Image (cartoon, rainbow, N blue to C red; front, side):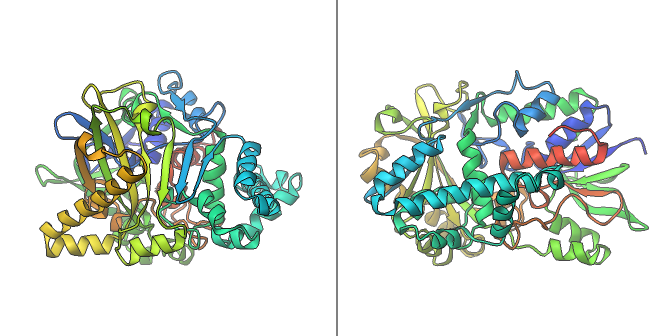
Length: 509
């Protein structure tokens, strides 16, 4: 058995782990059921002239000395894979009836804007933002390798973070008695989590909110270049990525995983693949049931009993004969809500399947990327994102495919109606291309159970200090996935690098 690491799946955390391992001289084989690497970070063609990223819209932790930068430096890719910053004065533009707030990098500027909007709640806004800052500092200590040494140096911040581990964002809003409108403006990037304030972990929100305040980025050459650079690092260092190969089962002997049996999706032939260690990038719960859940320790069974994150509705569009910059779009994302109560907005869309007054995100990546091969000359990409219930769309598609397609078109039409009223009066006239994706699209193309977008849901029950990590309790098997680490671009970079550190002892982060 001369293979050091057999990696099941080519999601971002697996690519990071595989690239680091191959670069260090380990023999790596990676199996991927899709025809493209990257999981939710992959880029796919649509029509003859367009390319879209599956789900990434902007990222954080890419600045000098931060997680992504450290990994890329280790791989000698930091000069090749670069990132462009969103507008520091407003990387997220929050829009709701009667209010608007641009979220800047600078916290003092954010407070100044909040004070101007809510002059009768200056103390409440200040206290909330201070709790966010202290929680972020405490979480950094608790997640660090030298946390026991640093806890006493940062005792106040650590206690604040620890006390908030089981809190939702809504509970902390209520604690500080923020007015509803302030809550909405601060939490309006909820499509990044696909959870409303009354379900979302406060600590998960803090990590993302403060992470983006340190710097919000988009790859100079799109996410496809990032993914391909990691994949090429594996292949250029003796590794192998085998596409369109589906893992049917794991090979287990004496409570040790020796490898997998995988099926070529073109020929349907099944072959065994074995290695010294198997790195599982597929959903840990799904993998555990393939292996046999009874083989795992009681502690692991409890950790594997997580709820999946909600899924999403996506609309991929391109416009022509118009400059979106003339209508308020640029180096920022726009988050729009018709309903000022985000908890009610989520419930209406996700549980009642009513999109008559949606809350959604708008992304225009072309303002940040230098490379324009994703659309025809003279056109601009614009994307829309909101939450969607997997079971509803799955049942609709299975019972009436025509109704399913009509429903997706109807949701996009409603969003376009809102865009025409609030941003671009004649938006429909300039649409050159449009397509939509639902939770079943995620399941079919990203192999994610129930179409989930982030693995385990980022509720306090699942986003805590005792959540699943790389340890599987079975010899020879290690988890490397958003549910066994952290979701999102920066989170999965950290997860892959952290596993590499744990297995090799080499410090990167």
